[in-house]
Image (cartoon, rainbow, N blue to C red; front, top):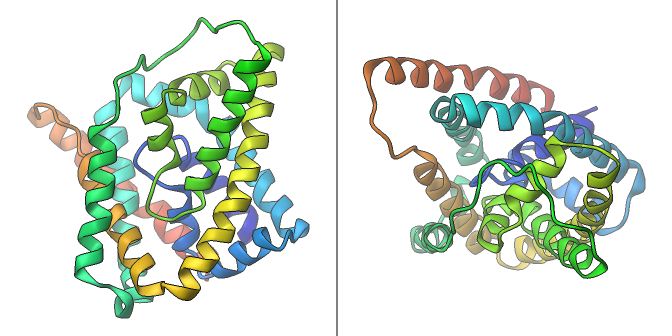
Length: 261
């Protein structure tokens, strides 16, 4: 059940720019076991994770799109809260491995990535015709998304925003039909391959360069929190609703901590 729940959480946060699905894995005490299972093709665990990821992604797509359309600021503060309330557990697990210079490197990497992020339409309702070239490129995007998703601290969605297909992918999920399923299948195939390659790299980095890896990834996580803070004016009503959303995020973290012990 833990692997299934972890998969659902990965699927949900994979649609949130600036938040890594790998962060959810890293916060679980089963992080190494999950990477080993993917790297060594343990299909029993992989299928549990995959089912959770698919369900979490599909069922959250419309809801997340609706939240960003109606209450974008409160939604972002909810996800900021998820990260901040999760952070003490990460510090408790990995505090002895932190190196300040590498923390700064991780923060710089995410900030540079953020600066390169272009602006795209938030909602896409008209889709381009499907061609083999488009499907193969879309599958490559899925590979990159999966590769970065398995790495805690860096967001696959943020990378997709840099490359362009993030909003198209989210809109495909929010408008499921026979035509949108085809490109999504190509994307998911690439995603699976990216997760497999990312898990291989994660195991190597954590084994040979644990301090450097943990410090850089933690720096990425910290900068992601900072960059998620909406740059907007804050009337009193928005301050109140955003604070409530922020505090409510502590509830799922408490549940996750109990389920992942």
